[in-house]
Length: 151
Image (cartoon, rainbow, N blue to C red; front, side):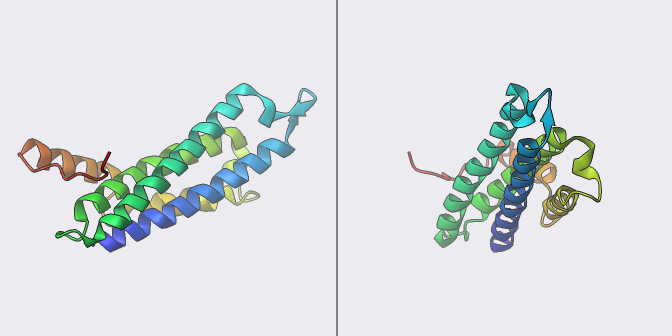
């Protein structure tokens, strides 16, 4: 199940990257008040937050794949990266839809496909809310926190 969770997280990253690329292209092409809306600070901040979510998830997935050789097969890291993938997809899609406006959910834009697909992928093998609850319950019950990354 750990390998499946890591694979789902990888596919969610791909969907988030595609959605972010669509949002960047849309905001670069859309002109308001005589300039591209990509130059507005509020739009840039949303796109930057989405970019950070994708890049941090990519780093966490690299660590999760590296932990596959542990005694438990990297199950802890796999659950953690799947949880983070669900959180990241929610954030990226929220920002992408916001900067694209109603176009983001219309059939004229491909963005709606990535919104639906990544949300469906989050539900497979435990959605981010369920995984957060499970991991939190285990920690409160005294489970050992496995190191995910060495500093």
